[in-house]
Length: 91
Image 1 (cartoon, helix red, strand yellow):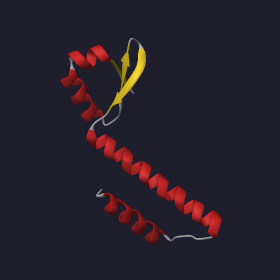
Image 2 (image 1 turned 90 degrees about the vertical axis):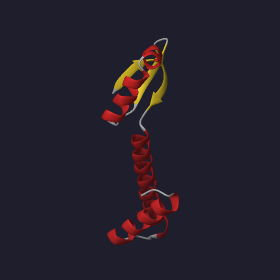
Image 3 (image 1 turned 60 degrees about the horizontal axis):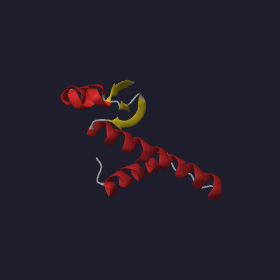
Image 4 (image 1 turned 30 degrees about the horizontal axis):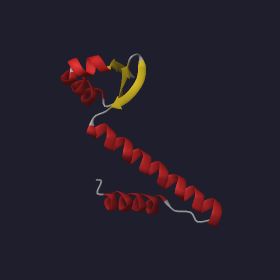
């Protein structure tokens, strides 16, 4: 986890951006010593969104199973994930 001050972000923006792309993880920015915001590369953001979407799909499948006894095979689950990604315009 990398933490930078807002002053560092302001004065060395290019280096912070390069670091965000290189590490692929969020960079926490502080202001007056307190947490203020998080910066991440676009690629890291999209990867995080995909992961959250996949988790949501798993939770939905688990809820279907608990409530209705509906279960899916691995091929069905993979097809459903591909369809959800396609609907969102994500590869």
